[in-house]
Picture (cartoon, rainbow, N blue to C red):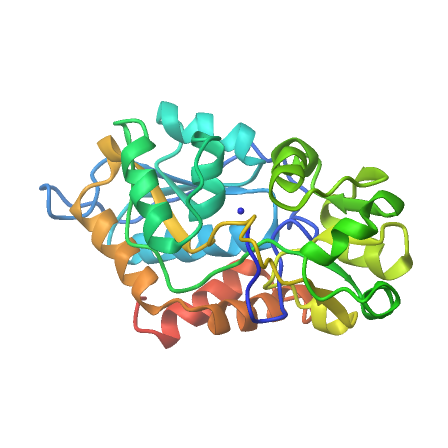
Length: 303
């Protein structure tokens, strides 16, 4: 999931993952199945998620909507990073995964220079293996950012990521454990950034920025802690990060017409403002993702 949204709110890898159960354990939700290629799935559909709350929320939205259409659903929340989860959906161990378009393309095609939504989607359609397919992307985006405190921004006169180049060697940057491997060379190539140290701050990145443990952090732009902690996402003025539209990724063999139409209907209604408000309920109000998902689906006539 990398890019900077205009909205200053986020969660993805910057908030702690929900639940403490075995991430490979399953929650099966059986609903009456129907036969026929256009009806509900007769076989089980497995919906997975990455190990952060927003992904868990999106997977719950997908799972509950599919159940309402008579699909038998098994849920596998909090599995892990893309490095782990992608192999599972490619092999058919998962049927459905909420993905982020730019990060997915960067993962499967490390040479890609696509940054706009249309170019990224075209790249995905060209590069995904034949067993996988992306469905309709949502308007909702949860982009990547490099974020600092207001004090740091004022001290070094930082407004853009490009501004970091003159001081980055004196600063420590934090993010998910895989952040360094994914982005170090990209930052050097696009902006000439070289940081003093990289720290795997993971779910605590926004808090680590506020406390001064790191001076710069990879915070997702739907994270409410950006506003709550008075943080400043720096403008990605050279487009190091790609557009991150929420996009269903499916294993085609198990994704029949009902699965496809149901997930596309969700994408048609999900925008960034909505995602921010849903994540506030989870990150700030401490509501459970399945309850938040059910409320949104009900309000939008999808249950």
